[in-house]
Image (tube, rainbow over all chains, first blue to last red; front, side):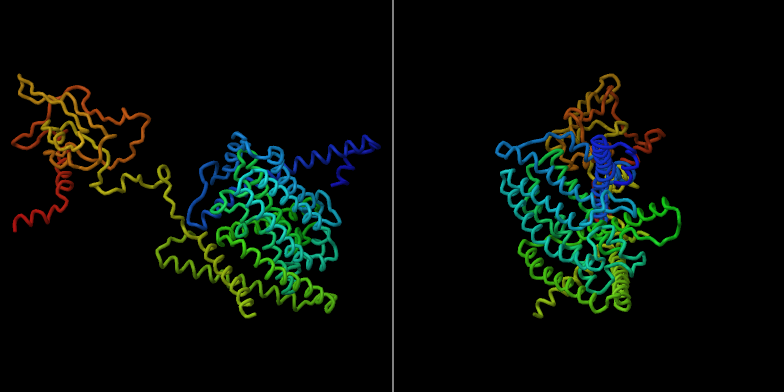
Length: 392
Length: 185
């Protein structure tokens, strides 16, 4: 990205150069935010409702545009035009700033998210640490929103969010270390470069421990993103809308923008660290074609994990606060620690990596997927026996 | 310790199974009925013949006997019928039914001799004013129907009368066959 802007600027120097550089970066940032993140979050909101509805034998929004695909535009417009209510007893400043802090924390993560080989805004050498750090800013925003609303539900939502994100940072942070150890770098592009395009060359198949770390990482990220089954901060049935209770109009929309946009960040992190990122087989010499293929691969993998997040939301009920804490501290933290230590040990025992272990892990996952589809067919057969119609 | 391990295995096993159940739902057809516009058949047409929807009057076969007006427990039917001295015919000058008042009890359609007043299967009565829910069947005063001893021969009225008689048969005597049998016995 830096090289690209350098090319555009040409031979300007000194202050002029810095100004060009600033304008270029801001322009590109605005392009990414308005051209990619906003529509993406919107489309996710629609996709989620559709997937969720189908899993509950409903249809979901299907009226606005083809298959309801423009529903998010209608919703966004509606929220933009709504009145922005600020409660009289609220802390006006914190109340106003909170949504922006949340959005800043989430948008900042996009700086280090790769899209393809040459496509990344800034390939920081501490990429993954940077993302973990800036996404924690979201907690501050949520706490601000919860406290400044001057409302018991919002307060509880904010507190729950803080407990949850602070707790789950630990297993999620530990579970990303096997990938970092295996690649020997914290840079997002470096981690992807350390993996191959073949599925069994991905970090998640390095050993059963890497697989475990991958599962823990995904679960931890779901918890950090306030996704069901860990959506305690805005548990509708308990806290109205949690920290977002008092918000209306655009400010409320910003929280949801961050929530749905965060799904892509979750998917992208999982894809980068454990799923081989944008790696494609070197099928062509054409740089543009290769970049496009890499972009498509990365986005497809990411969308798969976003789909899994929708799917989990439609499947699992919300956990209780005590269950949330016990799951984190009693189960996930020890398991994540074990995964890190075991991966490190394996790297000492097999400095070149153990091929049989890799293939065995891959075989386990393939068998699990096969067993999964057998169960799906079983449930479909049973459903047909109970009088359901099965669509093709 | 065994409890700890069994918690872990059951967490994995139950999540796995639950995910397969929800995934299988993607291949099942949804239950949603997209009322009112995206239906293969209108809901009205799927209702039983004897459904008590909004009232309708076939003026062509109304005898002006006022049986329905008298039967109505809440007086939502208003009929104004006078005898024309010259032609000895009943002239209907007004036949209003206030659908907003009507409780769809069906008592008016039971005594009707020709099945002129009858329930339709229409139930969508939403409107912007109460006034428009008053159905006025008589615009221009008309002569009431007079049954002929030789049977109906006007081709325009025959199908309407047939519908009316069928309605009486099916609506007014719910246990059509059984009722007659009981009387015979």
